Length: 505
Image (cartoon, rainbow, N blue to C red):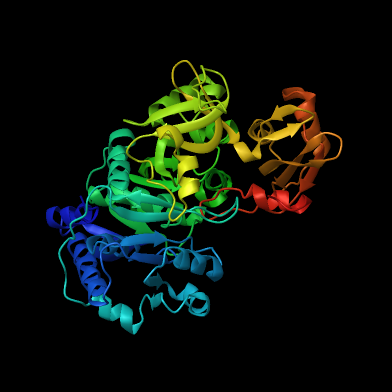
């Protein structure tokens, strides 16, 4: 089993279909993309890399990204994609941690990496002489890999301490790619995949399913997410799917430049990476119709734990069922989800505990961290660190990360519940709620609010909370800020917010 066969099959079956474009400029058809991956794989072997060696990808989005990934797998190597927004020192930590032999970088990241990488990790910059030599090497065949062989090291963001490399096998990622086709969309050649978010995370992972079905991979010219640019892409391409975090959906719906976009060109808006609030879902449905899909996964079970399919989500929104619409849906096909108490015993429907999952998408463990691996995978389940509850029909509702739970005066307070209320107010663009140390109550609730252009009246927000939730849950302190710290996947870094109030363990 080797993931490289997904691109190889597409190149053989649909050689002249467009594989990758940047805006309206074609870069590769599938025959050329498959050939590039085969030559790069040959180049990696010519450098002396052996099956199982690790290769760090320190690359911002670019048209060669997926070909590099498939070349790594074709040569029997292991990819360790890095978030391009990380500091060079953080990427160098990853490379040292996994003893990477090679780091492939885009020019915007190369200078810092040249200073920080250890001499044992060779740096290749896309477009330099060595890159051109690799890309023109003699092509090589597909390395034999077993299903349990390592394919991807998915490093956590490090928001809770030292980043850990989740070890994902060829079987893990092949299952993930197949389940997209079973549970999300049965893709066909001629469909479009817009890469609006980082290819090192969900967008790139979803790309495996799209490559398998020979869809058209399209990158915006800006390399990022601009609602006006998205509108232009939708005028060029049909049956388009794309991933955005909830903040991206919010930006898209509120930006006047998106208002004239041809909505009929959208096949699926893939939501995830952070909680999606009822206000955003209702606004998204009103503007886009039944095209929203909400998924739940994490690096240790990539993109694949539970999901609300488009039809079920649309039905919940149409019915005004906020409890159902804000759930993350049902366990994905072949995946088992449980909610466990502190002693790892399953809880009955409606009770809150830690979400646990098992199935063929779950990692083998963390790279060189046996104790952390044993703790995360105890009892045969991946312990996600997320708090949630299953209802009687099997729909999973997430409340918060266990570390984000606020305990004030002995009462459990779930920040998401407060955030959901505050986002209903038109003056609130974004919000994050945390617990801060309090000498009397242990912790007190603090709300960080990003206002819309018209500003925000904290007294109105306080009154809204008093109308909608218990008095003890409402924020005791309000901080109006210009923006919230986020990682490359769009997830709010609450650890960074808590650090304002003192050291975080």
